[in-house]
Image 1 (cartoon, helix red, strand yellow):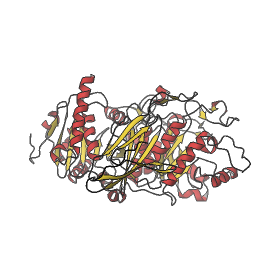
Image 2: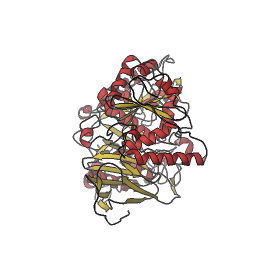
Image 3: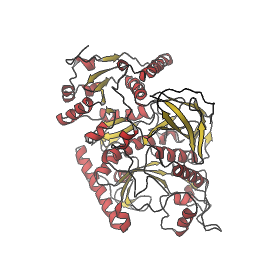
Image 4: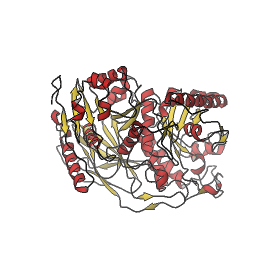
Length: 599
């Protein structure tokens, strides 16, 4: 089938069934696509041209690193900066950073929706949240929430010290309101994770996407609070009955989250409550410093890693989830209500389903109550950012792929921006329903029969230097035609193949790549018991599939580099652990084999 421009529409008749035989067939088909992804045969590719930007391209665009107060990274303990004994401890022992001056608001989304009529938060601050009357529209809801945010910001500003006024921080938990904080004046935007909060990876995708869209630094705050409990080795029980060395989150989840946040590009990582539970006691020893707890030892090793490897490259997230500015999404517990007021529409549910597609089984941590779901193995790697459809054109162009989702009410201006994005080389993913919107169909010259001809699979059409992909939502979440499209796109966009059931992050460097592999399997923990480890290590292999070859490879550890065989990179990753591997590339093809080494 040809359109008026003579461009060929390609179809994939992939039927996703519910039985294992069909699934195996799909996997085999996917592997065949992967083998062809870097074959150089344009007819087999969805993304036109060379979709992998160079390090210099990324460093010059919206993804470039943004230092905070002159430093590329901060690791802080969430308090203690005014305590002489904590200052003395951190000056003598390399545990965390001191001196980040900021003021701000925290958990304001949750506070607005759940703390009303003077109810205090955990710090004792009284909140007067809630709508004075039910909002009629999402725009009306957003204005009420904005006014509440501004009241909190003004109160925080009035209490801030002079040096703190240089950096206004917003940290949100549960609610994905990060872009709103940027729009409403935050200098640095953050998310609280851990605690009882779903899907750390999705909160990172929202936060990093907001930071890139608005040109701001970002942070991740990890809370040790879990269920009604808190990790604490102090015999005086800092948090009373909720304290204990087996309470709160596992040391493993702390470690994994610190490393994931750092390699995902966070400019600041906060160990919330660390100024207390990083130590066995608040009483100094003979040397005048506080004794480290097991959690403090974990934090100290992570901090050593960040100091040894300050250049982590640029996190590579080639897919932008492109949603409406008034989404008001809430992926937490309880009723799913946009802005905590409007029942989820089909578009809202589409966003939630896409989170489940990219980060399976990550949206019900309070149901599981065993630490599963906070971090998960993604079938495509952590390659997603979330941006709003009011983002500047330069931000749109920085993402090789845009996936339109949610409530889509395209006007002529938005449709024209999508046309420009595609014609300049971008790849736009549309579900069948969105492809039928009149404005989009008109500017992209999508004929009425194109979406209908997709059948059980997907189709794509060239437009200018880019492409439009139309997919049918035809199966269980994470297993329909879109999953097949994403599998091929991942292999065209990321020139690295990873084996094993692992979370993977990719960072572009000036001389190659850094790959972070996280084994989130085989370890569980309830809020008041010791962790349970019940699985063997994950065996992983890394294979570079792009131009050139791996000239050198090493395992990055707090103690330094450990060389790996660049021709055969294999690792064994214990349950609940992390491995970071640096690949240095060279042009041409490999000539001499190297000795085998497994870490």
